[in-house]
Length: 143
Image (cartoon, rainbow, N blue to C red; front, side):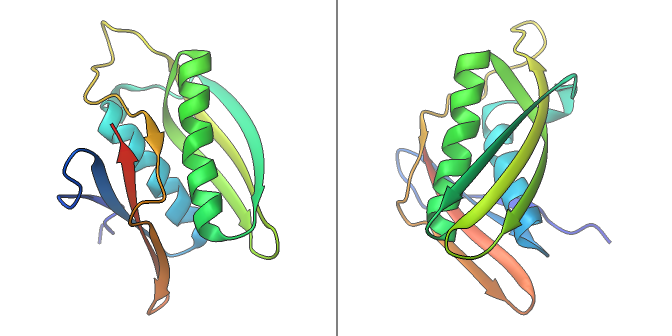
């Protein structure tokens, strides 16, 4: 049985919204990154040729999600890359800690379509919750 990773939502008029799911926090954050990447391009055409790593800490899970998606956008813009694979490890606590290894390749206009240019992650309508043993997040991104 295939478990749904994310849905695009029609709740933000000028922006994109999505909800993502995971059986763990790690999987939830990986699927949030994948949803944002899919809004930008077709990730099935992005080969995981090059890897980058980063670490973050934040006071809570919403701040961690905001910082996580913002860091991916920063790396996309400064490295000129598109990403398709995300390996996330989270330690809950005060502060929450995140380690990420993301993989992708240099953006190639002949290979990678531009679906939507994502400008920023936002806190607007952000939700992160655990229910019945599954994690769910709702995120709005500025396009």
